[in-house]
Every structure is written in C-alpha cells, then in structure tokens.
Amino acid sequence: MTHGMPSPPPPPGLPKTAYVTLWFPKPSETFIYREVQIMRRMGMPLTVYSLYDRLGCHLTGEMQRDDIPVERLGCRRTLLGASAFAYWLKRRPEVLKPLFASLLFRRWRCLEQTGENYWACYCGCHLARRFEETGVRHIHACWANGPATAAWVASALTGIPFSFTGRAGDIYPADGALPEKIANAAFARVDAAFNIDYLRGFADGRDDKIVLVRNCLSWEDCQDAPAPMQPPYHIMALCRFVRTKGLDVLLRACRALADDGVDFTLTLAGSGPQCLPLKALVRRLKLTDRVRFPGFVPHDQVPRMLRQADVFVTPSKVVQSGDRDGLPTVIMEALMHRVPVVATDVGGIREVVRDGETGRLIPQLDVEAMKRAILDVLRNRDKALAMAERGRQLILDYYDSEKNARRMIELICAHSA
Image (cartoon, rainbow, N blue to C red; front, side):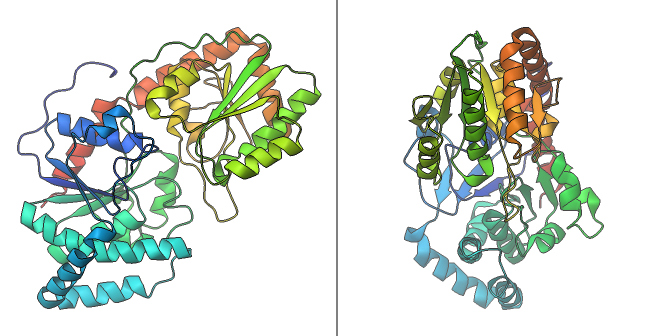
C-alpha cells in the first residue's frame, strides 16, 4: 500500500549497488528487507552482502523465498578473506596497512563491537574484490557500526563511493570511528529526523552529508482493531526483550493499575535476553495471572496480534551506556491498525507520537505518568481512536515506501562511481 499518486519510472542507467548488513533477512529488520525489495522492484540492480551467515529462525514465508540475491560471509568464508587480504596487501599496501592499523588499534565501545569491527575489516577486503569483479558502483551499509566499517574498507581499497545509515544502537553511543566514516562517506542517511543534528555533531562542518530518508514500510492487511475498551482491558507491548525497551517500567505501571482496581490483561510479545528477568519481575509484582508471554511473533502474525489490543505501549528508555531506541517500526504498525499508542519521549518516537494529537507521549521511566496515560486512553475511547486515526494519516505521509525508495535511488545515483 502506498500513499498518493503513482510514482514515475526510475531513472535509466541505475548503478549496480551493494547493500552491506550483518544478517539478511533478519526478522526484526523488516524495514531493510522492504527497502531492498521495493528498490529492486523499481529496477535498481541491487545485491545484499551479509557479514554473517544465514538466520534460520522466525523468518516469514516471504523472507524464506530467497527471491533477493544475497552473498553471505560468516566463518565458512574465512579463507576467502585471508586470500583477499593478501591480494590487497600486495596491490594497495599504502592504503591497507594504515587503514587496518587505524581500525585494529582503536578503542571501540565494548568487546562485542571490537570483535564485530575486526571481522568487518577482514570482510571488507573480500567485499572489495567482489565489488570490482561484479561492477558495483556504489556501496551502502545498512548500519553505522560493523557494516559501515566493511563498506569503508571496501571503498578505500577500490575507490567505489560508499554511504551508510545511522539508526539507533549503532550510533548511541557512537563507535570509535564514526567521525571518520562520515568524513569518508558520500553521505550518511538517517531514518528519523532526531538523528540529523546528532550526526552533524560528528561531521566536522559537512552538515550537507547528513540526509533524512525515512524507512520503507508496507501496510498490507491493515484492518482496524476493534479496541472495545471494556474490562478486562487488553494492554499490549511487542518488541525485543532488551533493556532499552523499558518493559520493567511498564510492569510497574501495571502493578499500579492493579492496585487501583483496574481489570486488565497485559501481553508482552517478543523474545530476547531480558525474558527471564521480566518473568521474575512479574512474579515479584504478583502479576502472574494478568501477564501473558506468547513468545516471538513472526512479522506476518503481527497484524493479528495488534487487532487484539485496546492500547499499545512502547515504554522505551535510555540505558546507562547511552543505547536507546530510534523509532520502533511496531509503533507505526499499531497506528496503521488504529490502535491507540502510549509511548515515551525517547529517540525519534516523538516524531510520530505527538501528545494529545496522535497518541500519548510521556517522560521515560515515569511509572505514574505511564499509568495515567494508559487510563486516559482506556477511559476515553472516542478521543483515543481519533488520536490513532490522526497517527495513521501521519504515518501514511511519512512512510510512503515508493517515495522513500526513490529518494534512496536518487542519492545513490548522485554519488556513484
């Protein structure tokens, strides 16, 4: 589903493009999958290169069809990386030696990021050979961390321009090479406006390099949720179970709702490292009879889940390291199903959840504010559904997939070899 008039045909002579990411397809990165799919449908000769091997779990039927060309690296390709490193060491030692020294002897933000960037450096050598062999004219990294490192190395060795997208945890906190990546990139794309000024702070005066192109999202099967808002009310959150999602705050708000005599059930759908701590917190708060954990929900089952909700809550928070959400796609999906949203003012959320206009926006970590906002939605159905409808219209304007894909194609065309 797209919004507005049909788009004109893509420009002729589109440059062969490589999209570099860690995993592809990845169930939680439907926005990348959709962007690639739509750009290829528009005629863009685009191949995906993933630094890691295939993911086999939780893929939708569409993702399992393998109709998008992907070249995967991973441990099985280690010898290819060694061969490519030797090749470039002989051919471009004046580039490879200082670049690798700079990247390998750099302070990265954590051990995991150190390993990811070391592997990305290694992969960049192999990708550089593949890009030359296949005639790639532009490299785009879907994330600012490891994928952008690999793209930067490949670009330095071949002279093929590269760009990258900065989103959320890949730039908060910034990794040790973000200023150099921006300096060497043709452009740095952000998918939410709140990141523009943040990345410009690393751009050393080249503010024009930071460009906003929102994600490509699809809106099939967007039936209105009934949202009867009759006891027992159905509160829902759907996300990865990680600290930045703030689900512990939501649980404490639900304890407060129970203390006030509100009859409700809470569905926490998803999976992740915080699953066991969250279940333990549910027991401590004596909410076991009110909270359901259905587990990971494949993307093609999300509409069914959302249509069961009276209110959708996104209690995101900034954790001690500085990591945070960008703009969770599931918020847009909830609004597209006309589900009222309560969310915190973290990252780019405030761009689509405008307090009293398209939903309820509250401060992060504020249990009392969250309780009051949820009650406001549940006790004022007409007002809540009107906010959700305004939110849907905003989403249709912001996330016109053809318009956003075409903007990416235009940028790549303007910065290709």
